[in-house]
Each structure stands twice: as structure tokens, then as C-alpha cells.
Image (cartoon, rainbow, N blue to C red; front, side, top):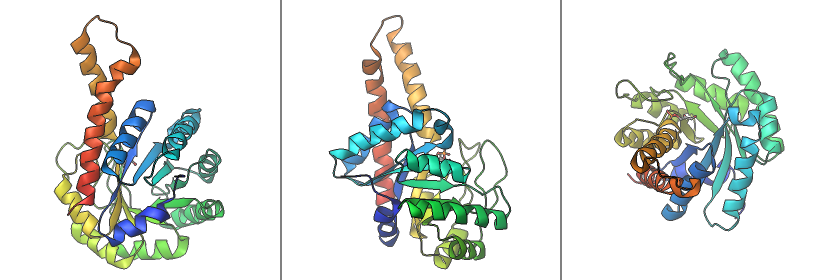
Length: 275
Ligand code: 13P
């Protein structure tokens, strides 16, 4: 089936109190592993790509590979730009065939975030592409967490018309130094204030039990990047260690690593689908 947008999968997921896993892939092997996991679980999935990969041909090539893969598949797959920082990037992703985008104005003032997001919403919706934006701030690399509020969520959604809203309730991008504790009460208030699908960034290292509580509040998309990509790198390192000086062609070298990632992605997909 053709690629879909958020609107074909996330509102339904929110209604049924489940979340769709969104994995950041960066090469053929991570894409194949995630796609296989979704097929095996017969579950929708979101393939997302960091904006950095749009600096060269990578994002477009991953897009083309994803399209080819889904052609003969029955599962709904969204191809999504993650953390787009400008309207130009949104346009670039749409031109590359992405069916969904994120515009990230979370480090701007609230008013500027609304202004930038509103412009991006017009562009995305003009091309039948779904769009996510973020309020509060989920930091990268040790920055400060800025928590989102229900009143901001309500105002932001009403003024911008986004299809999905990323909120900050205690997660951060990357590995945690100590286990995070999600602010579920805040998530619940936000979930009551807005009825669109809510997105949680920084899924790496958050215990599934906490994620399930967030899903109960309306979280319908959970992003995972670091743990999956690290698994690829560590997997290759351990294959090298195991095989010593022996040469093994690349495709064969990556096979066991892909399999490990598929099992990991399957477990996440399943956890987000069950209470
Ligand atoms: P992690 O790298 O912490 O899994 O976060 C992923 C993410 O939110 C991508 O936008």
C-alpha cells in the first residue's frame, strides 16, 4: 500500500489507547530491521529521519527505499521528517516524498513557535502531509527540560492546527544518567485539554511501564532513536570482535545485527500496543 500520513493511524491509536512506535533510521540496515519488525507484528510504524540527513542525498534515498518496501506491504507506514527547523526543510522533505513532517520551534518563544508552526502547517497541509510540532522543550545532550503545560497545549493546537503535538513531561533525547520519572499528572492534564494525538520524544531508556501510563493519557506516538542506533553500532563492533581478522562481506556481516534490532523494535511495538 502507499505511504500514509499521521491522520490515517494516530487518531485511531489515541482513541484505542495505544501508541505507534517511531524509529529514527539512518541507513539501509536500520530501515530494513524496523520495517521487518512492523511486518512481523502486523503493526503500523513511523519511519523517521533526522533533518541532518537532508544535508545530502541520504534522506531522499531512505525515502525512496521506504517507498519501495511499502509498495508490496499491507501495513500502514508513515515517512516522517524529525525535528525540521525551518519551513524550507519542510518543503525539502515534501519534495523528497515524505508524508509527514515535524517543525520544531520548541526553542523559540511561545509566540514565535506558534508563528513558525502556523506557516509550516499551511505548507504541509497544502501538500496533504501531516505535521507535528513541540511545546516546552525535550533537550538534546544534557540541556534543560522545559515542561509543557495544558493551557499552552490548548492555545497552541487551536492557533496552529497541527496534527500531532510533542510535549515535554520529563524525557530527554539520548541515554539517561538516571532513570527518568515522567510527570504523568501533567500528561493527563494535557491529554484532557487537547484531543489530537500526543507525541513523546526521548523514548530511549524510559521503562515501558511509564510509557504505558503516558499512552493512557493520549500519547499515540513514541520516538526512539538512540537505543536503536546504538544497538546497530555495538552490534557491528561485537561482530568484528567475534570474527577477528576473517573477512565477511558487508551484507552478511550486518545480518545478525539487523536481526537483533528487529527483535528490539518488535518488543517496543508490542509494548506500546498492549496495556
Ligand atoms: P531518543 O534518542 O532518546 O530515543 O529520542 C528519540 C527522539 O525523540 C527523536 O526525535
